[in-house]
Image 1: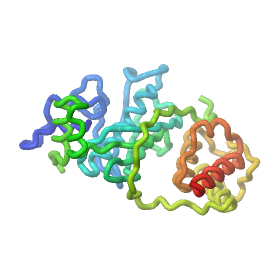
Image 2: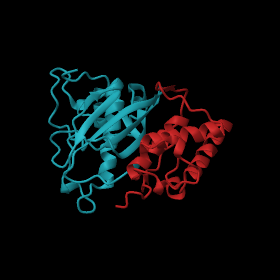
Image 3: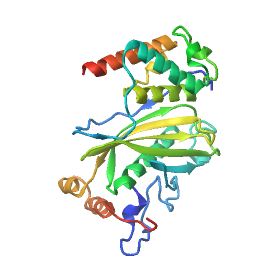
Image 4: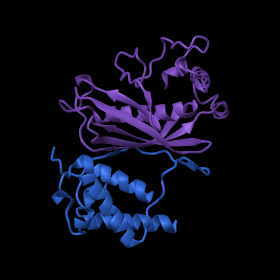
Length: 172
Length: 117
């Protein structure tokens, strides 16, 4: 969930309740990814420690997937400021991601229609070698769609998703 | 890790999404799909990624014997091929395929299936 979903619309300041594992700066075990616009998409830098290991010195494959899911989701959300849920995610791994090493991640939109968006993304070494790649499908949570979810999702979640749609964040 | 191993990939089960007419991102024109055009394009993709002349690549060459090959470059070759032909290559293919010719055959089959769909 983009941290901007919890922005105070009057002040533009992020609420302290933002807790996204991928991007919230205050989640104590989160990845705390920070995204910037890059070319046709969005990117981030990553360097993770042993807390995210599987084998010694190797970042858990599920964490690699989480990095890519977050990067794709950010590209989807920031392109049109509409919340979305991941409905499908394919990850392919080129080599292990190592603890203590620096990487970059980048994602772009590849297809879009009224209901869904497809995006693809990659994690690379600083020299450009491909570490992992992802293709994802995201279900757009427009206000109309959220209206059909009223009884299937917690009220607080629906309200937060509505609030994040079209929110202009500080610095935009 | 043996850098010439074909990658191990994890598939996440996808939930089917009903697609309405889509707007595709620019720059996704598929390469020509005649057999010869496919072979030439694949050799170009492999040559570009491995920094080796495409003209020197032959169908009987094993991927493991190619210069500069490692699992990252193999993944990049697969991704570039998918983009060039607008196809999706299953992960198990990377385990099954040994030679350039076998890879070309997989791509030809996928293009044929796509064109007949």
